[in-house]
Length: 534
Image 1 (cartoon, helix red, strand yellow):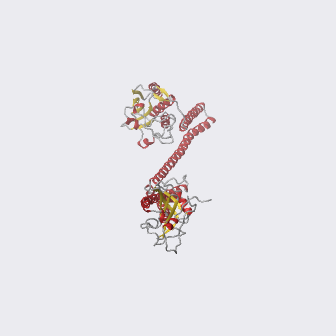
Image 2: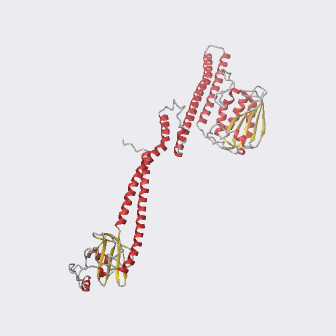
Image 3: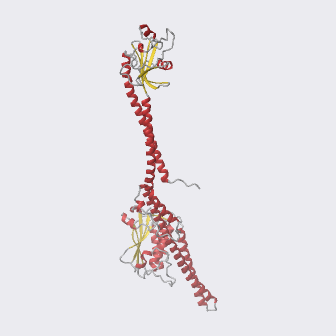
């Protein structure tokens, strides 16, 4: 499998490409600016030469090829024959040979002040002449070159022409006193400068781009080095069996969390994930431990009545008197009812653990409280059952669930308090957020929503208080756990509780979007059940 290029390599190449692109743009821009500036200077010089040539240039300065140079007699007729006329004679324009120093002295071709490489051309009455100053001598133009120059517009503008064998010229032509005067300056110097500039800039750009690539690679590697720490931490976690090694997972150190923002964010997210994994595994371990404890307790709770049923059944099968057999059958029935109640309570908790949805109806609390107090008075007339302060405020929830909450709380007060204990049930409206905050549930609500974050005025509290001996300090923190009893011994009489009543109260309160809490009090036990107001 082909290995993918590294991020550092890709970033460094991208950096080098960006630098190269920027340098190319700079080279092109600087070249165009330099060429434009040199052309502007050349055009200015060309304009000055055009004015000067119009004042001093004369076609008569051109030599005649047909003049015999060995004959010392030169007269005016010879000068007249040196002119090239297209219209009258039909002859082609003269090309003329090089004119060395000592030639014409009058103003015109090869006159004083003419720079090396300067092109001059004049046309008068169909007669053409042109020359280039080369190597401090005048080289007259041939016919094709004169034809090209003759096609240049005499508008005073700047034009570029290319003459075969002579190079490229920047020329301008205008009409002065009936004759067309054209002058030009070679552009070879500009082209040479531009080529040299481009060559130097391209070479430097390549060096800078390559250097930027290497420097960028080193910089990117240094900046991304903390990612290696993150990768090592992730690899260490992946190599572990989290079912057995969920503690002390490797976290990302300060080198990564204090690095660049993006790397620090990744490192922080990884550390947060590790914290969440450890927390989840810890809660899972606690849940499994509670489940094992629940199964063990449930097994023990069922084993005790089953043993009683089995023993009394064997006793009833023996040859005993009728009274003993009747007592054995009554004990079998009592233990069967106890097992049935225990199983029903465990099924209730299992349904609540499964997020069973409860009804969300408007419930009048006071009639339910009066019914529960009446039933408790019938079962335990030796206790004082009272309705305390009670606001007429309905709540939202499930009526049967609320009945079970009241029944379990009053049964808990009946079983764990001596005769003569006063039990008071009150209905209170929360008037400040502190009360609501203190009544917050210990975990996420199940079923019908959550009271977390609810306004204090939207909650109703049902308080059950007694003046009994209170809950032992060693189990106050676990009072809502399953199978937690005031009497932790396994050998209790049939009137003892199963230790599931308070767990059912808490689960039902949470399922209705409320909460339950044990209130600190100087005497007795005070339990608040907070539910959403209707």
